[in-house]
Length: 414
Image 1: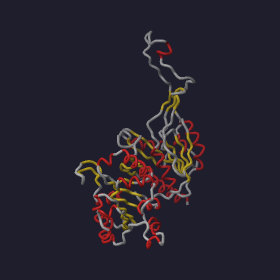
Image 2: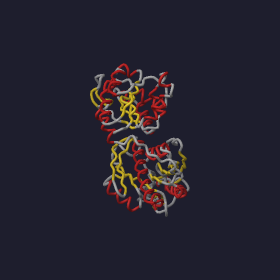
Image 3: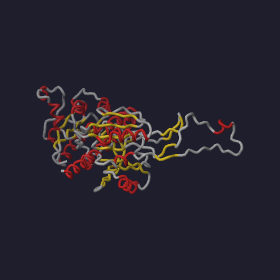
């Protein structure tokens, strides 16, 4: 964290009393700290104490005539390498999720291009309320890194999740996780596949999987924020198109293959996140298939009512892209349930991928349908384990790795 500019937002929760210790920890780690204090936070900690440990003036008001004469909030937003909010109250999270800008801190949240991390702190019931869960999911989608909370006894006397992480733990998390350092992908063309595919059996039934599309959409959104020209080829999902992203909707694996192969030659990077069906029915019935008992009138004559469906293999989209002559950098995703690393290493080599991102979907707390993921990145020369974190945060780290690989390609060709 040496030399990093940390903009520390402090909101009005009892955990704000830990803020001076957090400032000391950040400065001891080598960071420069500017403090923004909300009105509610002043009920728990004073500007004077924070100014003493930060070594700089504490900002408190969006309407400070002296600071705003030179558009001070914009200068603060540009200065920051990271916006850290600790404690982040339920109200703060709701304001961020809704995009409100009614005080200095919420305005800075919208005005900064720097990564954002929050350390939530609130009563355990507030933390588990559906509204807070919903806001947390939105913040994760928007790329906010969430640190904690911890579980334990709370100021109200209740016990459960909602305690702010200790200052040393917050700094340790920031020091070991590159939450700051958004990839610079300006001028790059990136194609992302996302979501499941549906392989028709008849007009009303299909084969599919549990993919929600969240990880692929997070990658597309973060790539667009990093300046890339992003094309998203999406299977059927219930997600909004990220801002600045061109979306192509497909249904089946063959339709996704056609869309990707048509666009791939013009791309700098193709990232295959979609959970593409390996097989499809050999024949698709033109009418709804009836149960054997409905078709024959009964299951007599020894028939047990079972049916079989012959399957044929779908084209391998990511391998097809990797086989293109002078094609793009190719990144694949692998969802595994056992021996994840061994299977991913073999898959990367077999398909000719520049990078593979593997996660263990046998875990209940990551992967399909959840807002969090954990993965290992595997390239020709290194492997990097990424701990459990919001999918948007993991997307940011994958893009940093892609930026690094692109830089190595450029050096090799110059």
